Length: 134
Image (cartoon, rainbow, N blue to C red; front, side, top):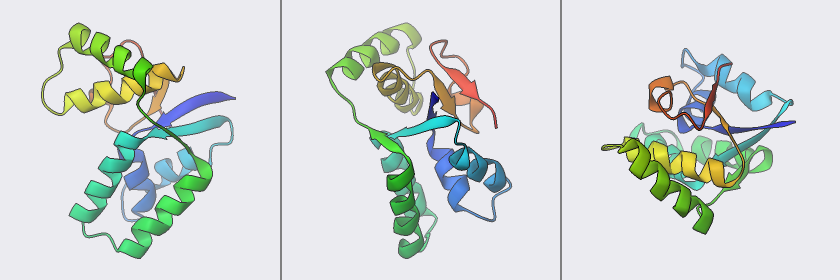
């Protein structure tokens, strides 16, 4: 079983049944061939987006409960901080791209090289990761 990190957009689209990406995102969450992960940075983004979109709190927290049962949450640590510093020096990201590099640093610290995302441009220039396409 391989490891797969889920980017925030996968979580949002899986929650939003009206999204054009809902079916693909939901399929990623049901994939039993992958061990699924996300980072605490992705969770912060999830809650920020849900509140910005005025998602019903019951739905938002209900889906979060489902995520807690089906994903492993990863936290920054000393190893990810070292990875983060190396990636910052290598890629020199600007603005929100810094957050993408932080997510990748946590992935690498946990030996995860594959990320599921619908925002391919956010990660395509980072050679350390492979983008999973559903």
